[in-house]
Image 1: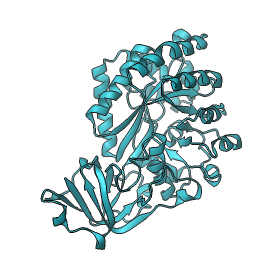
Image 2 (image 1 turned 45 degrees about the horizontal axis):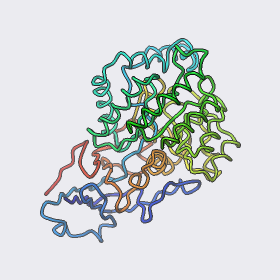
Image 3 (image 1 turned 90 degrees about the vertical axis):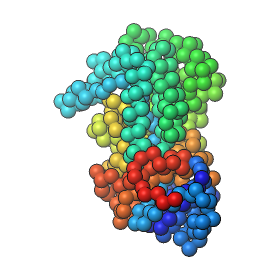
Image 4 (image 1 turned 120 degrees about the vertical axis):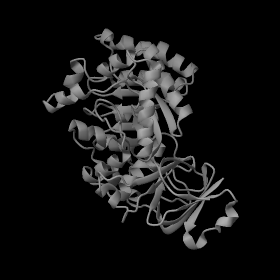
Length: 423
């Protein structure tokens, strides 16, 4: 069945020749068509262009759906390439500790942080964990996200890591979201392994990775390579083990200090290195010419009051930038990619065009789906946002608490919002 959306005020992020990502000065460019149409054929984008070239509705089939988008814009749905969306409960008490001045590391040393979430998750049944995550999945869909990467990492033992990964698989099977699963066993050191970090790394390599791979539960492997967590040497061992089983690396890197995480990620061809609050000439040089996407998580820096990644230095060096929500209970309890776009402009001084590129095509690459998502291109999956009537692209980050999303279509079907469809 075809769907025709016509009289679009502006069709945003179009591509005649699909790209993997947008880098450097090109990030400030966003190709659009004013007074446009788009035709969806089941789950795919079939055609688009200016209104004078629109096909006659009667040629699209008797069952075609027609949507009038007068005054509205259409853009690709957001791709959120870094989340911890599957978790148990919440950690608002730690939020009060942060208000009182305790740092992320101090809270972790007191048994809070990731270890707190691990305790809660161990006490939560798989069904309850799924129900909590399902609610969050529909929440982010309603705010314009069409694809999401979800990490494990609150299990910290084989049984509970598998529980998280099985919940991610259920979400893949029961929601219209495009979901990638990342195995993150090295998110923190369990209390019982205190003083025995090498033993825990051995456990991950010898027991966890083979089982996860045998059950086909993950697309990627991730390590928190940073001060106070896992070393470059630990990281290399785990990445090599994961790669033997076909798990491409993704890295938590340089959130707390210059850790070497960026360089080790590039060395092992990580799909992305994420956080990057601490990045300098050596990291930029390592990323230049690589296939690794530097990914910034504005929500975490905002919530924790951390330094901002020097994105303009990176862009001026010709790098691409992706941005994701880092949706998690401790450092970024929001999966709202609309707010990420606003933070990109407000805190990182990015242009609206740069922010949109960072949260669509570049973040699609950072989760391995830029061949099918992240832009308006013929043959790509029809994951799109129809905005409310808004005056300009600049309004999207400017009105940072306004909900500009009127409708969301994933795989060509309406999943959120209300649009009048005329058959």
